[in-house]
Length: 191
Image (tube, rainbow, N blue to C red; front, side, top):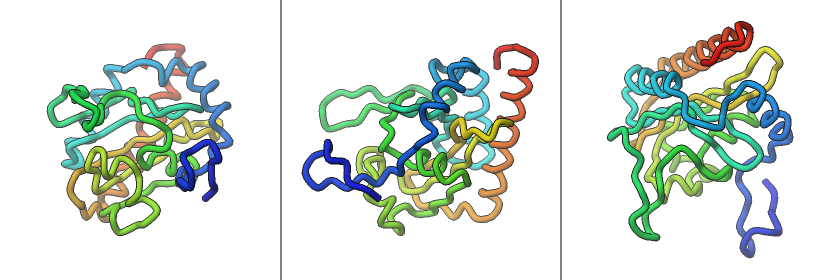
C-alpha cells in the first residue's frame, strides 16, 4: 500500500500500482476492445450470471484511467441512472480505485471474496458502501502474450459461499473468453 499525495489528506490508496496499464491500453486498443459495449460480451456476462446465480456479471477491461465493462449483466438489465448526488451511477465505467478487478489484474490470479467485510483491505472499497457489494469472484484474462487484458467477474449484494466450484467456474470462463479473443485476433474478425 502507498499514499497518493494528490488524494485528500491521509486517504490510503488501497488499489495496487499497475505498471502494465500503458501497455495494456495499447493492446486493448489494437484488439478493438475496452472502448464500447460488445453484444457478444454482454451475452457472455449473461451466461456467466446464469452459471453462478449471481445478480451481476462483467467482462471488464482496465486501462490507465478506468475500468470498462464491455460485457455487463445486471438484475434489471438497465443501468441505474443517478437521480441525486447520494446515489451512484451504475453503468459501463468505473473508477480504477473502485472494485476488486484491479487487484486481480495486478495479482494475475483469481480472487474469491465470499464476504468482502471479512477482509479489511477490501471492506473499505467504495463499491461496498456505494453499491452494497458484499461478495466477489473474479479471474484475469491473460492472453497469449502474457498480458492481463482485464477480468471476468461476478458480484453479489449478499455474502456468497462461492467455494471451489465457483472458483473453477470463473477460471474456466476466463480461459474460454481468452480463447475467443485469440481466435478473433487470429482470424481478423470482430468478437
